[in-house]
Length: 346
Image (cartoon, rainbow, N blue to C red):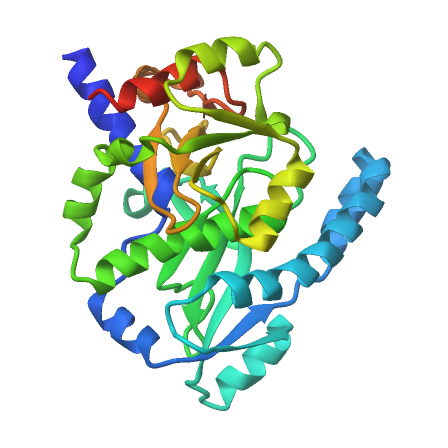
């Protein structure tokens, strides 16, 4: 029974981490989205509260935070122009939250808005009506300790709606988003949208994702050295994996995405999600799952196995003050390579 339960829990949350933390897109939203060709990318501004907190607890990170915001504002519009191809020829503008709000008050219905937010879990109260915790998004945070279990996401919403009512949310890694994270996020989202535009229902997509490993055949597996576990052995990985492996630096990986030329490769990535544990003492649980996806179309091809960890996490969450807060693996291990190879045989 444990094996069955752990597999179900693991598969359910893995699919949520890889594809989206929000619901799949509603048909009416897809139809509305197809008619719009004007996009707004929200311009981030350094948060005064974050800067104040950093000056108190991590003053050496203030400059890094400000620089990361500047880089995000340079990268995000360019990534949308390059990687969002579902609406044909599009125009991309960059505006602040206040400028977006002003357009909304004028009853503007021309834009789709992309905004980097942080997904968090709000603790539930002990009242009857709000017993359990819930997930929500808020302004993009800067993680400087392990207590922050929020993860960055791409929030997509129609301009006439509030940012709290997106039609889609796309996961990225747990890092502050850079060019590669944004590109991967939009490509993964593209896969979901493309499949649904083709009439594929959510259930069908979820059932087939675990069988996509067959498309790994003859592809070179690209592994970023910066994301490898400290104990990772390259020679062992090459022995365990049936096809070529290419090890690249983060800078080389960024260049691959900027050129959007992958030459028959599959890329390993570590998306993150945050979920409620239904434990009011420890409401948040961050899940990190190493996956392999096709960088050309965004199709998830396989993932590592964290089902046993998921089973333990949910089990602990039922015991007050014992809930696990971190589940999965933030680095790629040799065992993950074995799991990727095993997926092709299942």
